[in-house]
Length: 395
Image 1 (cartoon, one colour):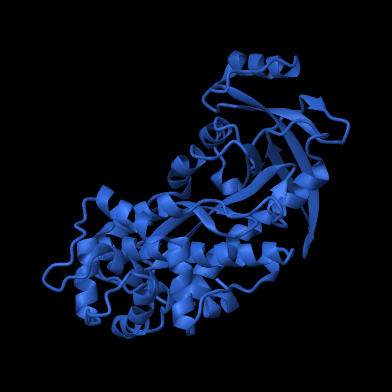
Image 2 (cartoon, one colour):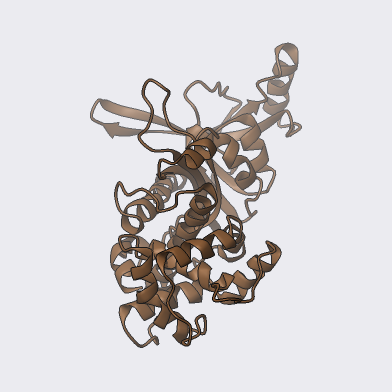
């Protein structure tokens, strides 16, 4: 981005256009059946898409102010015709309604991919790319349509002030960029929304996940991709010691909770003998336990991993890398606080536009995080040391 000339708005849009190229937006619009031609003064899909992302980049300004701010910059990148008149707020809303809820979702899936290079600090463990899964939510305007589609937190006696949309996302720990996501209503559980994300892991990734995402079905789906897993165990999960390893960790067996009685005992015996169980019924796992000091003494952390060999990844390295799961929390904070603004409700008053806006936020967070990661890698520093807020103001 260093070669971009002009004011900060030009550079801002340059980052978006570089990370979210127009041909990807055009492909997404075509797949979603959204017309491309500008007729009768209507904004074409690619312009509407970038204006929607710009509304997230400049979240504290009105839609019309954002349009006035960025149309000149869009022209410099071949996205806007200088002969066109900047749209009004109502014109932007109408264009966003024509764009619909799916185009930016499809664009995200075409664009978002890992950005950490082999030399990026904090991005790898034993040749595996560190990723994490986590969930968060947005407050959306309290309209009847939004309430019907997304719902409120709490209950009728004590419910949230605004309807909420839930997001579950996979982020790359090194760059903190979101690389996969699902968006849905508040009533959808994080576990249910995580299911398609876990089934889409890459075999060269190491997934970090909190105990709230654990279930036997979720672990089975994630392990079936070939990815390495480092998952915090729920406190109630029974983990029998099958074999103690030289480094003090031990092998155990996860068994489908629907299996009972003698069949369950047989699976434990098979695991103890070194046999590999049917993954539909059980998994042999390695358990790493350690304590973390807190105000009340210490907390026992129990990690489940399918990396069995201590020579491959040590217990200390697994415990250390699990702390990288907090990078997903940092990514959430970047989106909800640095971009949107703390406590700010989304702009959109209808479900289609809410979903469109959420996917736009995910794209903008991805673009800025990719810029930070590339710059930090070039400077041989951990991207964690770079400020998202400063990058946002300069990007």
